[in-house]
Length: 139
Image (tube, rainbow, N blue to C red; front, side, top):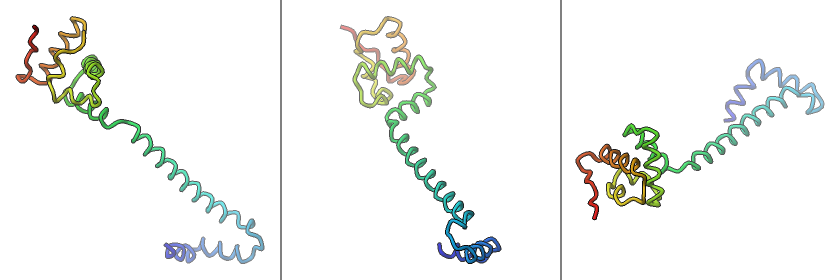
């Protein structure tokens, strides 16, 4: 790292800083040097806090929600179908809503939905599980 300072000192700009600093009696006379150091410090502080903010926001979004969103996109589900899956997930009190894409039993015996929601839920289950979907038996 000190090699870079040595290279800077060998340039014309570096030599002019050296001449100027030798001729001045006060540190405040070297305004350009002070401004450069403050600028580098400001850039460093900005990058540091930006990285800290970015990491906090990445950690704030749950990985289970990201997986659920990715699975919805992969299955090309429309917004109404996503909302219906979210409703089933809340009904089942699932920690991970992506489980709905793995376990077809979670679709059966849901808490009371309207008749239209039940029909949409059945067609959604057929869309997700295909021939593996079996209509739940009503007693």
